[in-house]
Length: 173
Image 1 (cartoon, one colour):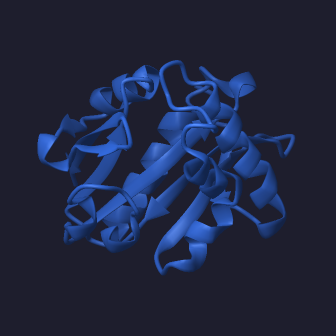
Image 2: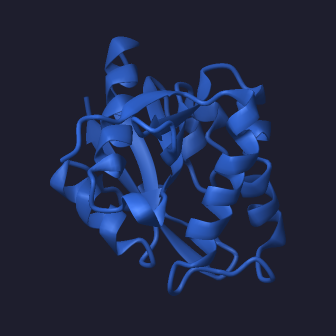
């Protein structure tokens, strides 16, 4: 794993690049709805800075030594701002993250795990008791990584996003 990546909060001048990264990654997932099917979702991805209007919500990036954005994730220190379907937004003493994406050039470098670990670190630092996330069948690489990191399926968090089943996971902290 390449430890030369820096995880930090995104800068405003990077928001457009990160939004495009999210759109590219999610639109290329086999079995995931395309922009024509869920235009509002992709509009949110393209304008990712809009999720930052909530307290304790952060856009984290992994930056290479050459200052390239290798990946990004949105961390929610308060689940009421998480913005998913189902019951996740009612969870107390919990953090979550959504919209994890890694630039194709940097895949296999451990970027997803670095970003996930930073979210876990932030939640522990704030004495929260669990991390909540969601994934889909189209996100098999991420799904496997989450399970290897100790996340457990939590069916009570599942919901439908249009025609797409979304599956919940919890990690006790």
